[in-house]
Length: 428
Length: 118
Image (cartoon, rainbow over all chains, first blue to last red; front, side, top):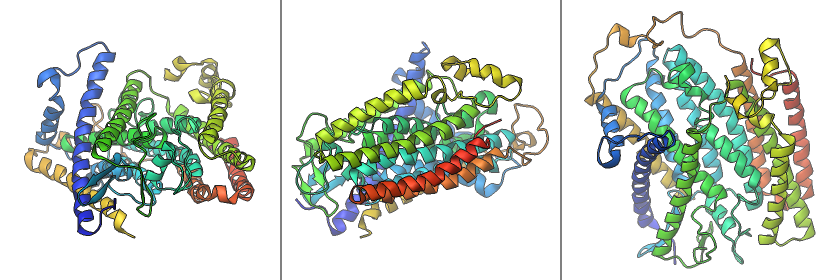
């Protein structure tokens, strides 16, 4: 079956954009509701339960309130940046998902429709480029508000986001190393396993053969979305609301929506990079591959599209659940711990890990190991050993907890060193 | 060649338009009655003390500078990773040398205390 051409392609692209954008906005509303309900559950209270059945319309009521409340405009604000900041916070989070494949290709009367908004050959670079746009919203809001708390939040937020962005990009290098390309649909093929035409594939979800990357990407993803334990830019006990202190009504709502959209896209990215994307585990019927030149391998049908979409949604929802769970369980880092975790642990570990993977690839290629399941199994073994080393030997009670103090200056420092464990991390 | 990027183009339009409509709708639908108190910076209900744009920690500059160095490092990693399996041993040692130079820089910054927050 041929892929779409000409005017059909243009109209289908417009249709997909509108459909996926609407879907994303609805899901963001759903995630907000979900988070509040889970928060209620974890803290042994009801959560929102007044508007609509089981309080399910609360998000909608909040949306109406955002629209109708008065917008304050601080006298000290710099107009252009002050107004641009909420837009810059929201737009990158919503357009990032353009390169994320949602489901297997759908056959229609006009041709095969890719379930991805834009199947670009540089998907990885797009993710990195648009992902790093998020920092502009934070720094603009912090700088232009003319409030001390917003300013401090903006500085903290920008330093945090750029620090963890380096780690985020580095954790993706091993994936490119194995996949040998930066097109995202190829990555899902890599995890599904094919023989014959096209680039060689592994046939295993990458969270096993690249376990350390998975762990580090999860941590940096959490930091990039500015959620607990990395929500220093908006720590309410210290900075009121951080960089969006001076925003009210819909402008605040846009920061809020942008944050949840960012969380959703991060979960979707983890799914695509490490959990097989829309792949259904232990079933080869959904192994459908569209090469960069448009060649289709496999047998696409509409019910496979539905099933794979469900698979994608379930995986993403599980990750969102973990994010929410973490938020309502862990305490917040102290700022120096956060920066040390970023610079002294994540970046160093990610760089070293790139070389471990590169070395393993070199040795395995030399030995002539078949690039497929055996290859992936050996890499998995290497990663189990590495994770053991990382968590139990190298990092015992020090860097991973962000509480390392090699230099002791003054009186306050000495006592912190003796504190270990999560209790010490939460003390501030 | 540019065909796949059409989706990104349309999505950017929809994304920006959506944000603009949200701001505009809120601006039209909500009341606007500014007072002196509403316009002053929020400092927990106290009268604001001093200016906002004063000196702040130099650490933020150092982090920004280190970020530029290491972000460029990651950009160099990607083309290398794409063709790594064709390059083989040569590619491996090339990158080891490149990273060794950067690692010296990081070790220096670390030793100098640029990564310590006080």
